[in-house]
Image 1 (cartoon, helix red, strand yellow):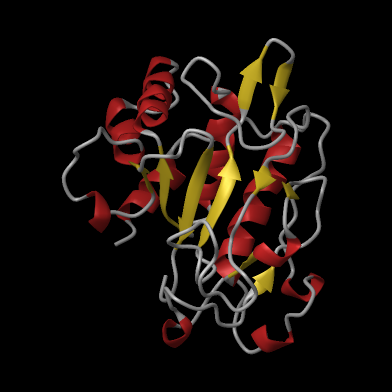
Image 2 (spheres, rainbow, N blue to C red):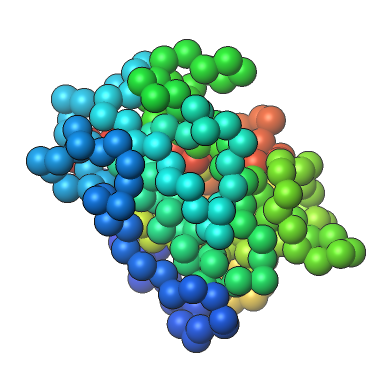
Length: 238
């Protein structure tokens, strides 16, 4: 079930030289607020009987860490432990490896107890999060809000590092993104020999690829995702 995740972890990592940013550290569940209900099982794991697509059980609020990420609405950033761990881990990696790139914006995840969230068909159980895409323009890299992104404006280096860091957590079920950006990233990775063609197609498949919904850790086309990624994390037995 996790073959693709094993493939991702085998991909050559970027050099671990410190470029001046803070060193990444493991997130301690005891550092998060309002987590008494989580004691008794490991951080990053939601028991099968608490997994839901309609409500959020034992939700964790994304910590206030403006050096790593920014968010819009504090009452809409509640997620499962897996979601919070994935976001914090990946943004820590970004701050360490590319400190000159501004922090991403985290949009809606879920409300504290989940349920219907205006403007979304999902985002009900803490396993879905909208996160900005890094773009490049004449003034350099920036990530101030959700911006319409094209293959010409996408910051390939920053996005690949961030998305790879998310995948490396082993907590990603899939990522929704416009197919034009999926195709552009796949081409970039192959041309720059960061992934083989087989590896790149495994993560950034062509539109119409069979069996996408049965695979884990893939980027998949969904319309309306040219200015952000929609991250969905796993729930239950890993």
